[in-house]
Image (cartoon, rainbow, N blue to C red; front, side):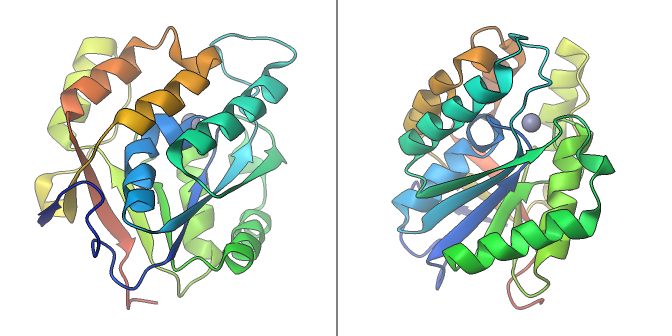
Length: 228
Ligand SMILES: [Zn+2]
């Protein structure tokens, strides 16, 4: 396990471009935001592939929610220093019903387009336990077999604490399964979260998670470099 400082050059040696693969607008900010901005500060170009417009969220329900959240995603990505965003039109809440090879092909095409050296995704359990999160990660892992995949994860003691406090379904990892604790600056992430106003204004679980995480994020290689 290694520890590093914010945006230190050489955290990801040889990497110049990363692709984040996620399910919903806000995953790139609420979940991956500090890590993605850390990569940007480290000199890595970061792009995002988001499979759905998040139209099924129970927070701020509206007929227009998909287009509202698509716009929020683009503004938030700007705050994080993300270079390009591709938003898919798959159904929010039903990503598991879309054939995996279709999602995988979209991942592969985006990797080609942005020249990604590695991917960043939610951990295999989906972190919050949302099935769409697990499906997005599954698509990333099957998208391009020789591209390393870095998983954002929660230490299990922290996930258990959130589940106790809020009755949530976080899926954490023991320290022995975590490859890196990265020291992050959450300034840009907090700005990006604010862009997702439809989802962040009444979201006590999010704020509590960030409070418990403090200035570190945990990462594990789902497919390590050189393992392709
Ligand atoms: Zn999500």
